[in-house]
Amino acid sequence: MIAIDAEHKAKLMHDLNLVVEDAQVLLRMTADQVGEEAQAVRERITQRLSKAKEELHAVQDSALQSAKAAAHSTDRFVHDNPWKSVAIAAGAGLLLGVLISRR
Image 1 (cartoon, rainbow, N blue to C red):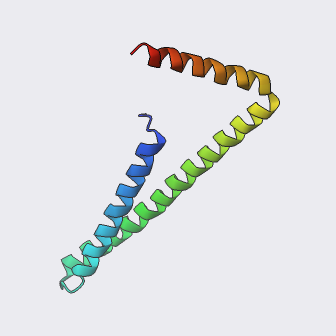
Image 2 (image 1 turned 180 degrees about the vertical axis):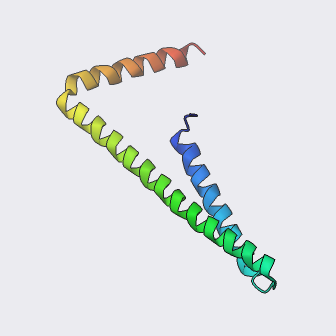
């Protein structure tokens, strides 16, 4: 599975929301089209859009729950190990400083 960072997930979610909205507009624009085949296509698209919206909301909820769990775990770790947290932060800052100064 490909790992996606939070910024890319947010953009993907936004783009998927736009696609769903555009499809809904398209359905409304073609509502006056008659015929069994046109009606069947509209019904299929409507069902698929509904399912896509449900799955999109589920993914958003899952991402939100994961972020909350990570924040809670981090908070608990920092409170349980304050000096270890300070040491880790200092080490990360030192490493970042060394990497930036090499340029």
